[in-house]
Image 1 (cartoon, rainbow, N blue to C red):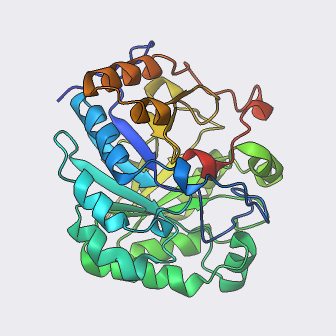
Image 2 (tube, rainbow, N blue to C red):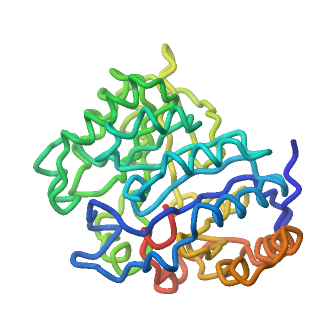
Length: 328
């Protein structure tokens, strides 16, 4: 089915990233400030009924991929119930989850039974001490336990998202590659982005993925590849296996001309771009009693606000939201 939801630049919108919470059980230094407590109050969160209604409207408009994000989505109580409800909505045929996997071991089964098919797991290091430093005290073994539980439950693909940071984890790229090859995971490298004050402060660790790609191709026989998923990664694979590596390059090679996604925050605000402040609040509209037809018209109007491209490079200061506030 071709998407019927199209922005002002002719891009079909078929992918929604749904944040179910802005809270997280880790404090990665490039994502959320230490001691940050300015979270949305539960009264401002979209309820499961409201989320289901909005996702249903997106499904009727041609969006078929939904990725559940946060913050850390597994800190939202009853997430398994929500995924089961979303997985039954007409038009939604790809339900996935982004997580830090700290709590995944005890949730993996119910999520898989609820229709979540694919997982993206944030993991920047395989060194326990370094993991604690990056995440503000996180326990690496909990993440590994979560990954192994997800693998046992049959999630596929499981993608490991590694933010590449100069002087932080740039000595571990090959080790992460081998870990992913051993377990059948897909490895994806991500460039740091100037999202909020934390993201801008992390730009001192910025590392172009062109450099990373050159380094890995010198060691491994990599060839161009593709991978389903709807996201912005450009993939390569080992020539003699199905092991894939993705490169997400919002800074060195932006992918705005093919951007097919919008984001819905936990408070019901639609964000059309990570690197711009264009937004459209839906919560009060939902609570005012609008009809489904009116909701669809508001979504169409919102999508038409989607800018042509981000301006991370030109105006890094204008994106004031932390990543956890937007939904990954």
